[in-house]
Amino acid sequence: MTIHSLRSKINLIFSVALTLLILIFIAALQYQEMHAAEEIVRQERENSHYLYLYYLKYGKIDTAYLASQKIRLVPDRERKGIIEKFSKDKKGRIHYQVINYQYRRFILINNDRFKLLLENMNRSDYTLKMSLLFVGALILLALLYLWIIRSLKPLSDLKEKIKSFSEGDLEIECHSDKNDEIAAVANEFDHAVKTIRELIRSRQLFLRAIMHELKTPIAKGRLVSEMVRDEKQKKRLERIFIRLNLLIDEFAKLEQITSKNFHLLMKPYPAERVIRAAIELLMLESDNRAISLEIREAFTIQADLELLPLALKNLIDNAIKYSPDHHAEIVADANEISVGNRGEALTEPLEAYFAPFHHSRDGLGLGLYIVKSILDIHHLKLLYSHSEGWNRFTVSR
Image (cartoon, rainbow, N blue to C red; front, side):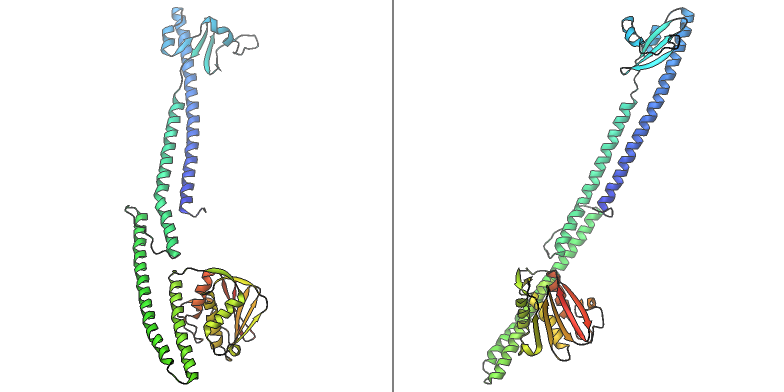
């Protein structure tokens, strides 16, 4: 998944938001810890000053005040182990000092009036509050992320359905009952699919009706040709009607290809067999005069034996028609099949002739459009070159 995808951008935004949330939490925690430490130190100094003044005035320690400040007077039985933890000066004396020992905070006050060991019982709850706030923000961020990702799921489903539609599945349904923008796009696409599906079915019905109506007079024409006494004319008429019948079958295949409603039967075939099947489709009276075939290197090719010969037939037919000598040269060599003829170079780039009903002085109409459509299905390429007065179209992997 690249950074340009919508989901990647959302992931990036939430990653940045999570990082900022963690950094803010750490910074706030450190600030609160520093502030709380300063407050505790201030409180302890004020308490020590108050105890000293109170002792001067009354000659005793104000234990009630200590209790109100959550400060415990450490009894003698606990003092020994704790006193040892305080540091002494060069003369071995301990003055006012505060230490943290075993997660507890002790205060030693040693002056000319009294010596006290106190434990500060105050505990700041800022860490718990900040942690709860952080966890709450984290859960909110996670829920927001899941909500947005879930909202994008229909977009992924729509993408898969568009892909299926592009592969020829006209029965997809992508209607949505939601009210967001993705649902609006899905509903518009669903409407477009239904419209296209109806148009394709109408076209298919129209073409099938035309082809059906054409087959009837062709069949009658073949019956009438049987009554012709001149054998030469009879065979010529038979070839014409057979040719017309084959053309109708070819149109039916092309209609299936363009509507992506054709199921390929791919098998490995010798290249020579595919080429000869294409030559047979031309129904030439004399193949040897119009075509020369050279198999320089035999190889097999994965092909549908109905479609690929049809593409080659169109290339050979164009080569014969638009050559001054009406001759085409076919060469099979090193996993390539090339069809060449004498003539002038194409006046436009090859890709321009792939458009249906392309018009040019060379008369290339549907020919190369049909060839390109069939080769695309077979994952084959069509290359063109012109050298020394020869045009050459090469089918390669």
